[in-house]
Length: 115
Image 1 (cartoon, rainbow, N blue to C red):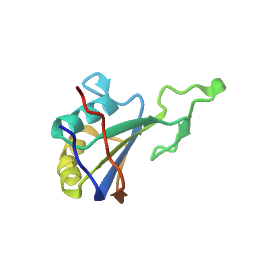
Image 2: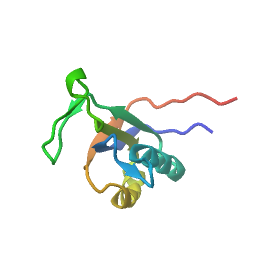
Image 3: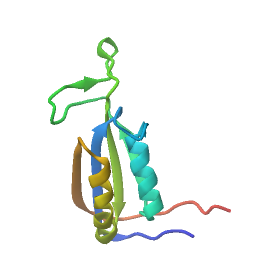
């Protein structure tokens, strides 16, 4: 079954550290799998090469100062209703990090047929 999503939507972005975990698994992986089980339209994880957050510690991928906690962003786009229904999951999972919501417009959302 191919999902359809067009028009007004909500983008959920979760910024965490690469080394953040949930029950000894990467936290970003747990978030993606829960989003999938919930039936959200999709989720992607992006690894940053440098950044800092509320702790003001700069984490970088540069060779001389290899960090084991690079920034990670998980981006989820779906209808406002579905995204807002998913937020309680994040209350349980994200102890440190930043969670943002942005209005967006889906112009095209297509997938491959699995035959």
